[in-house]
Each structure stands twice: as structure tokens, then as C-alpha cells.
Amino acid sequence: MCGIVGYVGFRPAADLIIRGLRRLEYRGYDSAGLAVLNGDGLVVTKASGKLSSLEKKLGPTLPQGTVGLGHTRWATHGAPTTTNAHPHTDQTGRIAVIHNGIIENAGALRTALEQRNHTFESETDTEVLAHLIGELYQGDLELAVAAALREVDGAYGIAVISADEPDCLVAARKGSPLIVGVGDGEWFVASDASALLEHTRSVVYLDDGEMVVLSRDGYRVRSLDVMEISKKIDRIEWDLATIERGGFEHFMLKEIFDQPTSLSNTLSGHLLEDEGTARLEGLNLTNDELKQIDRIIITACGTSWHAALIGEYMIEELARVPVEVEYASEFRYRNPVVDQRTLVIGISQSGETADTLAALVEAKNRGARTIGVVNVVGSTIAREVDGGTYLHAGPEVGVASTKAFTSQLGALALFALRLARLKNLSILQGRQFVEALKALPGQIEEILGRVDEIESLAERFLDTSNALYLGRGVNFPVALEGALKLKEISYIHAEGYPAAEMKHGPIALIDENMPVVFIAPRDAVHSKIVSNIEEVKARGGKVVAFVNDGDHEIERLADATFTIPETLDLLTPILTTIPLQLVAYYVAVRRGCDVDQPRNLAKSVTVE
Ligand code: AGP
Image (tube, rainbow, N blue to C red; front, side):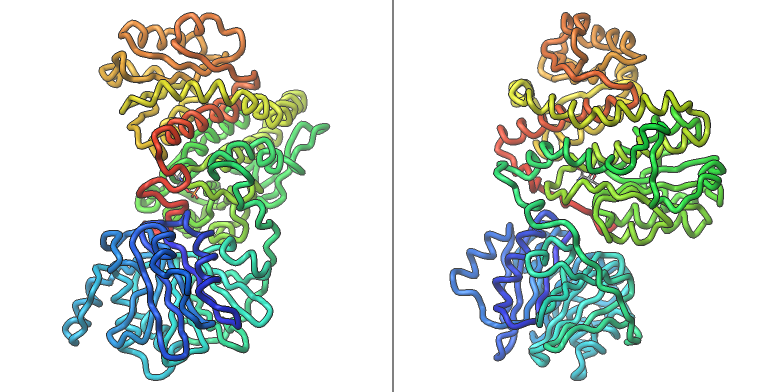
């Protein structure tokens, strides 16, 4: 979605805002803009394309002023043009607004305003809000913003400044994330902490329906009825180095190589080796409450949904509790059947994905217990659920999720183990599972040590426009994830399928030009997948297989193989995913794609 930054202080605002937007560009990079109050009025500059085009347009001399706001856009209403870029101004041109979210009743509001002689330059819902604030403005920006927002339906994170009040900035949120940065004599607002961490670690998380006014002498939080709200100040624990590339060419590659550490962080402090189980204090569920759970629903989007599918295998196999996996965007509108004995798990790296948040709220309203498996500390989902566990994978900047995925699988394995030991799993089986989990970071290190082999595998995909990924059992979702990675960063069409399903249709696609990727560790369904490989070879297909060491049967059949260290069947996805991430990465780099900021995508989707 979009990135928002605002500042009131004593330093030149433009420079600070541009630096903040640089950190938020993974949220949207269709266009960018800036507005600064320089004592004579409002200076607005915007440009289509990446932040760099705005910086080029601004030139070496940035607009002066110590109050301002800036925006980087992921287009929803109106094409990614300069006219549709934010900030948008009101009819007088004296009020500037930036917005992250969707104003659902913008159409009706626009018509009403046009009937009152307002004229609009852009196609955006945000310009409508700017005009509404302008129309309601009677010398008090806070009151005008509150009044306008009371007429708005939809989701928003907004910041507003006015040439008539040069020392203040008003911001508000509903559905989209917004935090306040509390500095020493200066104050910030931003969509997430990465934009203000270089200035302060002290932040205030705004909740839905809250508004903040930044002024020279501090900040105050109010409701939209302008009632005072006292908020606690939280402290950001991670540091800037974790959101630097650290010498890697791309964030995605850095985050792939982070995985031995990020997975260790996810597991650390949770494994109880002697008892062969896991502790997850944050779940806020007693052992008795966990034992009473007779149905689990896991809901998520995108890569997190793939993790949910693997979680289903782990929990059902280990704990024998029925699990259903739901696309959050479908679950929220499907009148779901849930009750007090249903546990609904929401998985989200960002903790801000609108559909996953709404699905959890829906489940909660229907009496279910909700827990979150989330990476971003303090995010909306983390604060909405009854309990949960943080991944501690560190910030993930690359739009294509990598380390968060393997950490999600680690967290789900911990949950499955804890539940299973409460139900039926023996201490010996538990200890074996703990041992296998502990070995994973080292095994990932071993795979990353053979990155050159994987880079040469990528050659096989360069001249293709289609690819098929096949896996069985717990590695079927890995096939989905491998295909998604290739799609989202190299723009090659790819599909993931259960290997046996191939015969029921996709086999028609197979010819000598289409790579067919098999995820085929030596697990309980190995012999079945060997037959599927033979079926592909019989049609002249080109097979790339990810196998365990010494798998001569598949090495004889496949055109290329890459070996994966052995682990327990249920944990193989944590290893088989790594080379698929790297294949997608090297194919995208070789095709000259923008790996960290793929076209049309955004890191967290905070609108429906
Ligand atoms: C994955 O690479 C994508 N960025 C996307 O599918 C992502 O997984 C999805 O938007 C869910 O995001 P979340 O985990 O932050 O909720």
C-alpha cells in the first residue's frame, strides 16, 4: 500500500521526509510527492514513478520549511500519473492531504461537492477528502479533519497540513497503519517505524478512529469526536542495520541469506528439549483451553496462505486436530461457521493486511479465540488478536516474502508440537521433533553454501514464459510458493499443483519448452512422485528436481537436480523452499527485473 511520512520540528522537513519515504518505498512505488510549509504558504511537488523521479524534480535545493508531509503511492483510484500523485489539495490550494487506504464513498462525496461547484483535477478518492476538509475548514484544522472523517466510509491513514496553520500537522487512522514518532522537540508520523527509526525509538501506535495533532509544543491524541485519549509510548527494539542491504545487491537476496539467523530467532527461547515440547507464552491460552480446541481455522493471504497450508499438515499430522485453511478475503464474507471451541489463527508478515485483519475481527465477533503469527511488532493484527507469537525474523523489506515464510513454518511447527504434546505425542517423538527443528538453521546454511549450483539452474528458466511446479503432501504448498516467487519477481507465468493432479489437466501444457519443477524429498510419497516425473518425461518435458542426497532414481530421470539435506517429512518445506526462492531471484536478476520492487506489487496490502 502507500507510505506516509509527516514532520513538525526544527529541522528542514523536506530532507527528513525524503529519507523517510526511501525507507517506505517497498509499500508502493507508482508515484511520490511532498508538501512543505515555508512560512509563505504551501509548496507541493509530485512526480510519477519512483521516489528518485521526485528527487530529480526537486533538484539539489529542497523547499525550505520545518513542517511537511510526503507520500509514496500504490495506485488504487486512478492511474500512476503525476496528477494522481499525492499530496492532493483542496479547492483553495491551502490544505494538503496525503492518504493510505480507500475512501469507499468518495464517488457520492465527489458528486455532492461538484454540485457545490468544486472542480477536481485527479481521479483519486483522496482529492475528494482534501476538498471536503477545505469546505469544512473554519480556522481550526483539527476540527475540519475530524468533521470530514466523520462523513467518510472506508480505510485511511492520512496526514494534513494547512498554509493557515503553519505550525501544525493533523493525522488520523482507520484500517491503515499509522504511528507517531516522539523525538526531542520534534514529532513525526509514518506508516511504519522504518521511516523514523533514524530519529527516535519512541513511538505511539494509533488505533482505529484516533487522530493526532503535532505542533511545536508536542502532540495530542484525540478521537474523531475530539475527546482526549491518553496513549502509552512504546520502544522500537530493532535497529537500522537490519533494514540496510548489508552489502547484498538486493534486500531479497539479503533476506534469503538471513534465514539461518531469522529461523534461529523464531525458535530461540521456545524449544524445551528435555520435555520434547515448545513453550509459546504469548498465545494467552492455558493447556486446558488448548486441549479443548476441537477445530482450527488458519486464515491468511499470499505467501502467508501457503504457510497456512503447511501448518495444516503439521497440526493434523502431529496433534490430530482438524484444520481448515481459508483465504482471508473469502473467509471474511463467507458467513463462516465458528464458535467458542474454534481457534482461528491469522498469519501475516506485516500484520497489516486488510483482508487477514478483517477475517480475524469477523472470527472474534463470532466468538472464536484468535491468535496471530506475525512478524511486525506492534502491528494492527498483533494488537487485535487474543494472543499470538512474533516471528522475530527482523524487518522484511523485499516485496517478495522469503525469510518470513520459513519463520512462519517454524512458528507453526512450534505450535503443532505444543498442541500435540498436550494431546497424544510421546516425549520421545517430541524430542526427535525438537532435535530436527534445532538442526534446520545449519541445514539452511549448507544449502546457501551451494548457491552457485542454484544460480546455474536458473538458466533453464530464462527463455521460457511458463513453468509448472509440482509437489506432494506437505510439499504441494511449497510448489505453490515456488511458483508465486517466480511469478511475482520475474513475471514468468508459473503454476503450482499437487503432482498427481497434473494428469487431470496441466499435463496438456507440457512440452520441451516448459520447465517442470519437482519438489521430491525422500518422504512417504517419494515413489508416487517418481511416477509423476516419468509421466512428464514421457511427454518430453524438462524436469528440474529438488531431491535428497543419493536419490539416483530421480537423478537418472531428471534433466537437472539439486540436493537438499534430510530432515523429518513435516519439516522438509523449510529446506525445499530455499532453492526455489533463489531460482526465482536469479531468473529475475538475469531478466533485468526490479527484484525488490516488482511491478504492480506492494509489501503489505492494507486495502481490500
Ligand atoms: C509474497 O511474496 C507477497 N508479498 C504477498 O503474497 C504477501 O505474502 C501477502 O500480501 C500477505 O502479506 P502478509 O504476510 O504481510 O499478510
